[in-house]
Figure 1 (cartoon, rainbow, N blue to C red):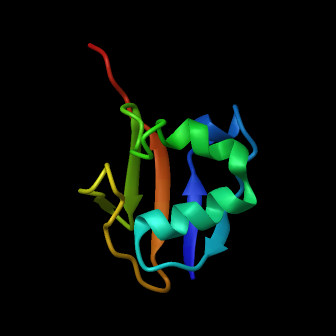
Figure 2: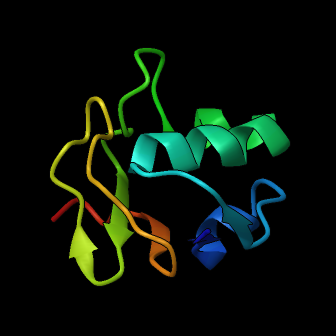
Length: 89
């Protein structure tokens, strides 16, 4: 199982508690999470299923590299952290 957590900024807008979800890729794990909490999907992914521009997804301490198909691999005991990315200047 992979633990999925969301930053406080997300929790202000949508109910997205930490959960343990099975899967071998970021996409599989997030799909499992969204099956349980479908209202969260639109905050994280765009209409094409890619990570939204102002969202950052980390596996443990590493930013994912595949924002389009979410193919980064994960293993049991890993943690996926979802944050709102900072932007502007």
